[in-house]
Length: 208
Figure 1 (cartoon, rainbow, N blue to C red):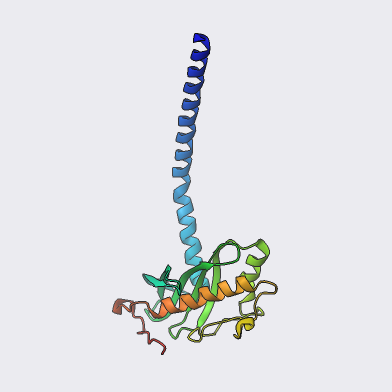
Figure 2: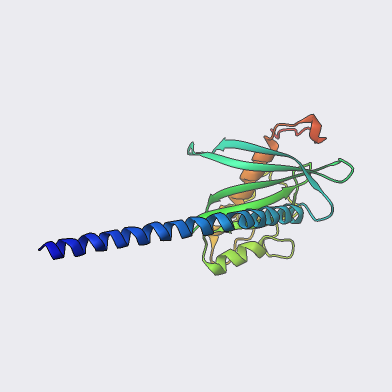
């Protein structure tokens, strides 16, 4: 019995030691990789902002966080990257917007000019099936069937099935609705962004 008890204690000590060592290794690896991952994400975001704002030389003059409630009262958070060209002229803003899709959250980065017209968009994250995610990334672009580039969501963008003007992704109305909702919400957040004189931004007028 004593021998069995001793064996169990030794086993527990060994397992504890292995767990401590493994935890230490994981913590070290995480610390080692967190820096490069953060840099990679920052670069991806910078590239995304440049892309949705139509390319060219630009800088983020100001970053705002806008909180709004959806119709059900749930708080939504938007990040608004106000941009300028090299001469300090207001170019509009890139807005990060998240909404629920068919398979989970759909995170979109959409660019607006100072008047609120859509310059471009990109999907930052999505939990849709691979085929649907790929379609959403292309479907609403200028060359896509559901083209929204150049449109102004002052009149909300809605799929034709719901009485709107936008062609939904084939066999994926839910994803299309979620995508357009993210765009409409991004526009509303942009129009609600506080104007700071230091950014050189043109004051936004709210639509009636």
